[in-house]
Structure formats: C-alpha cells, structure tokens
Image 1 (cartoon, one colour):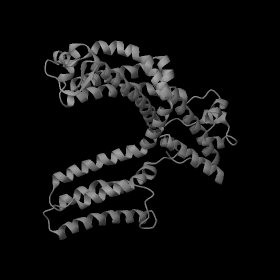
Image 2 (spheres, one colour):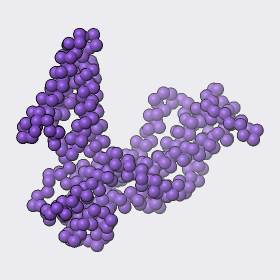
Image 3 (cartoon, one colour):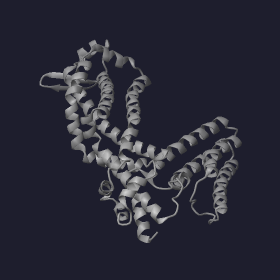
Amino acid sequence: MTGGADAAIERTEHWFVRRGLPHLIAGYSSSRDVLTRAVPVLTLLFLVEVVNAPKRSFPIWLDTVAVVVGLGILVGAWMLANRLRQRPLLARPERIGLAEVAVFVLVPPILPALFGMQYRTAIITAAFNLVFLGVVYMIISYGVVPTVRWAGERTVRSLGTVINLFVRALPLLLLFVTFLILTNEVWQVSRGLIGPFYWIVLLAFPVVGALFAAARLPREVRRLTTFASGHALAEQVRGTPAVAFLPDVDPARAAGEAPPLSRREWGNIGSVVLFSQGLQVLLVSAMLFAVLVGFGVVVVSEPITRDFVGATPNVLATIDLWGRTMVVTEELLRVAGFLTAFSAFYFTVAVLTDDAYREEFLADVVDEVGRALAVRAVYFAALRRGATTLPST
C-alpha cells in the first residue's frame, strides 16, 4: 500500500477505537492489541503483590529474598520472551502470550506459599489476579473508556430528545406508579426486602431488560449490514476517514463483499448499543426517581408513612413549607427506587417493541452503528485491494 493509503487505514482504525468498536479492526488481536496495553497496570499490581508476599514476621533478609525472587522471575520471563522473539532483551513486548499471563497470575500467589506456607493467601491472590485480568481485558478489548466517552457525548447532544421522550412517557408511567406509591402493599414489600435482597430485586429489573434488549439486537444489526445500494453506502461513509478510500473502491462491490461479522464483532457492537441505550434509560430513570420522590415528599406525610409500614419511619430530612411539614424518609427512597427500577424495565421493553418509541429513542445509535458498518465495508475493501491477504482475525 502507499503511504497515503496506510495513513487512511490508520485514521479509520482510530475512528473505530474512538467509538468503542476496536473489534471492527482487521486482525485485532488479544495478545498484540489488548494485553500489551495492559502491561503497565499488570506490572504495577505484580510489584505490589510481590512486595507484600512475605510474612511480616520474617527477618528482613528473607523478605528481601522473596521480593528479589519475584522480581527476578518477572524480568527473566520478560527477557526470555524477547529473546525467543529475537527482540532486544528489555524491549516492551509486542505480544503477551500464555507464558506471560501465567507469570502474572501464578508468581505472586506462589511466593506466599513458598515463603511462609500462606496457602489461603496464595489461593485468594490467584483468584483475584484471574478476575482482575479478566476485567482489564474486557475494559481494554471492548473499548469501555472510549465507549463511555462517545455514549456520554452523544447522550448530551441528544438530551433534548431524551427529555422529550421522558415527557411523552411520563403521563402513562405516572398513572401507573402514582397508584402504586399510594398502596400499602408496596411500602411493606419494600420494607421487607432487608439487606442485599432489596438490591438483588432492584438489579433484577435492568438485568432482565438488558437480556431482552440483547435478544432483539441481532435483528437490528443484521438489518444494518445490508446496504440498499453502493450510493447509500458511500453516503454513510461521508464525513469519516474512510471517505479517502472511495476513489479507489467500488462502493457497490464493497457493499456486497463485506465479510460477515465475527462473534467478537457482534459482541463489540452489542456492548456499544446496550451501553448507549442503558445510559439513556438511566437518565430517564433518574428523572422519574426525582419526580416520584418529589411527589412522595408532598403527598406522603410522616403519619401516613407510619401507617404504610407499620412502624416509625426513618426521617432523613424535614421540610417546612407554607405551614406544612414534609419529610424525606428512607422508606420513601426505597419505594421510589423500587418503582423506578420497575418503570425502567417497562420503558426498555416499550422502546424495543413500540415503533414510535424505537424510532425516536434508538435512531441516533442505530444510525451510528450503520455508519460504522458502512465504514467497515469500505475499509475491508481497501485492505483487499492493497494486500493479497488480510490479517487473521
């Protein structure tokens, strides 16, 4: 490829990353593109765990031996991996393979087992390292940080649409939840959910809503992978770095020859759509929660709350206004949170099943995903034109 084409490809790949879609990049590799970027944080955690591995009751010289052994294993593994790949011994690795991952996960737990017989500590450390590695991998692999930034910026831009949608949905929601917030049973059920059970019930609604949305997602995305014409594809690419490929790529051919989405690409697109939709639902839920709390503060006085729950309520704040004493109670917040979670689930289902809601609520994110898929089609066409084989995915 020419230098200009290489630069255009690099800009296009950076465009994917900024939108939280790194898996649309050809040849996106866990060992090269994900774990290598996690080296600094993994190394820092490794050093902290190695330094804290020995028992504090040990003599200083034995603590020093344990720390030196751990650091020696880390540096030795680093140098050996570079030597096998014929690179400078202390160069930052270009790939992180199974051996390097094993060193990070297993060496810190082995040290307390060898230097102090701390087997329980070793097991806990190994489990923590596995979980930490998985979390870091997911955050970097699926571009969580750029996804949050992109979805946040898009939500701010479409704040007017979200507020308009909330205003449209509010009358029906209020008709439903206003009746429930004034029923004795809801207050008693909320009060009876003690400790983690309240949060488990609350989290069950968004989890079920996310599963429902994920089940309907493939149909939406599959529709976006089909382009009406080459001209339609070219129009979607306008304003993106991939427009540089259009003089050398036939859009009609690119639309028909775009490779099918891999499982990782499906997962990446799904995570972006679900997160973006979830952020909007969260914003609507926050507004609904504020409305319910405000309504409850005005209508449900402390004596009424006592009748609802059958006990003295926990008053968090008192407001005196125009001769009326209003209270904010823990019980009111719990009921408002419960009803908000249920309403958010209802709202999610309505958005995905009602054509009017879906068109207004999901239009922006669907358009963005459609544009990304159009850019992907032209991008892969440019790679096919400039190379005999594409990097393995």
